[in-house]
Image (cartoon, rainbow, N blue to C red):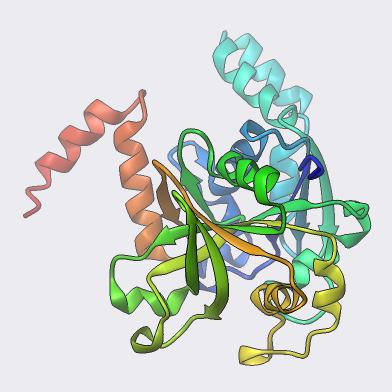
Length: 294
């Protein structure tokens, strides 16, 4: 029987160079989507899926993340109370109550496998989830919950899948060579990290969310630096596959992928969710109409 997934690792140690100079002092994961930072959307997805412990792997200049999920300071609460802003006070209090937050500083070589390995001491030999801190998928049920259901049935490694419509975008993701299993579930034969679009095995990007067994840590430690001299999580997953561990992709049902890791996609996300926000949607829509865009 598969063990219950109760922990998520959220890597948030990157420099955010695509958003400089904005990210010189502020983490890219704290960039606002209307009135919530990107990483809060990620945490909320995890909590709605049943996660209890949120392990955020940080680096230098990332204290704002810890402060955001900490208990609000007394001065702020007093200000809100005096202003009769009870609803805002409720929202602010709720943030620190979402989950049990654990913070770890990343150590080791550069690459997206390193923050996962950094979290090993608090995983305690159990399967766990990984969600990136600068992108999210909105779906009902949540993406991670859909993945947990597949894990409960099949075990192994489970990765979220998103179809990439534009061929030129394939080089930005890990693209899977897959065999259908059932409905929206596929057995992954191989993952090619950031392939040449003409050599990509499919248009199914496997990224953004993972359910991993604790054996991933030994696989990560055994890796030699890969593409770009970095430690890639996909290389460790491929090692597990070679040892007979089944790897599955779940094409997320009813999901909308929001990539906030580059300027253009971030602005698209802000506009789209701004148009859905109950406080500003109507006036924001009128503003956009008034721009006379064609």
